[in-house]
Each structure stands twice: as structure tokens, then as C-alpha cells.
Length: 97
Image (cartoon, rainbow, N blue to C red; front, top):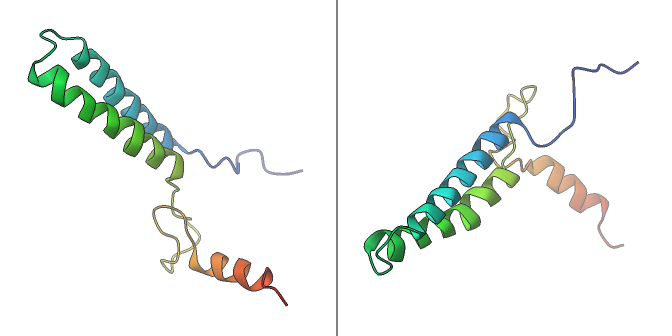
């Protein structure tokens, strides 16, 4: 019987924290967008910057971010989860002959 405590879910607690931070930044952007006057600094400049930051940077990073594998201590896994050994082995196994 497989161990129930181990899971292969790629979305970890770290991803969830970054995702929630992105949602908060987006929410703050919409709140600042609604503050009058419409031509003020907050609604004209700061709100769009926060919205773009949330939608285009923080949310995608939260989806791509992977924890480093605790069993791999050689430093081959990076913060975004790309392992050069896996990439090379995939490229070699799918090479045209």
C-alpha cells in the first residue's frame, strides 16, 4: 500500500503563499483604481502597475515555482524546478535517428 503522507501534487504551500500574495496585489490594484479622482496618481499610475505586476509577474511565478527536492543536495534543482540532468536525458531519449 502506498504511503498516504507523500503526494506528488506540484502546487505546494510555497506556491499557495505566492499565489495569495498575487491575488492581494491585484485586489489592492482594483481598490486603488476606484479611488477618486480618476486622474490622480493612485488610480492613473499605481493601480495599473499593481495590476500588471499581479497578473503578469506574481501569478505566473506562483504557478511555475517549484520547491527544490530535499533528497537532491548537489544543487542541480533550481528555484523554478528545472533539473539539467532531466532535460538532457529527455533530449537524448527523444533525439531523431
